[in-house]
Amino acid sequence: MRILILSDEESKSLWDYFEHSKLDGIDLILSCGDVQAEYLSFLATFTKAPVLYVCGNHDASYKTHPPDGCICIEDKIFTYQGVRIMGLGGSMRYKEGPFQYTQEEMHRRVHKMKFQLWRHKGVDIVLAHSPAYRIGDGPDLAHTGFQAFVHLMDKYKPSYFIHGHWHGSYGGNYRRVQTYKDTTIINGYIQYVLDYPAPT
Image (tube, one colour):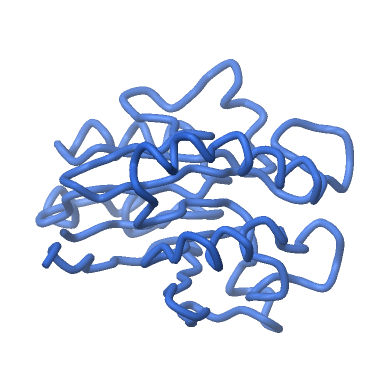
């Protein structure tokens, strides 16, 4: 399965200079948040691939104008072609606004999904906006990752943890791909294509 990952900035290649052939072979699109709703809606009109998304800390407009033709998987496990995808958007709370959480609030969100995790017998991909705590996150409060995500990877061992929020232009701790125990972590900044292995 070929998965197109989007996050934080709209790709000029996919929007300003779009050609339909750029979506050829894409089976699934995952958005980590902080992209314009119109961008996701635009892509959804040119592909039969489902467009799944979580919300970033700058996506307040999604509350009244969500992306058309796309599927929000916040606090859900969505299964596509046998792949179980868990959605947990938002960032660390650093000011008033939607889609921001304290460490404890994110722990509670994950805890509330325990029944879904049991029913689906685990999860293959965690789709988040923020990184996990001290694994590709930033030094400031706004870009600190969530401890709950580390615990989630420890317990359920998803194949992939996909996030955004920490931009490649920030430098510092930015890494496109890294590994934590049994999980491959991908920073989806702007765009990244993942060839997800077929189930064995």
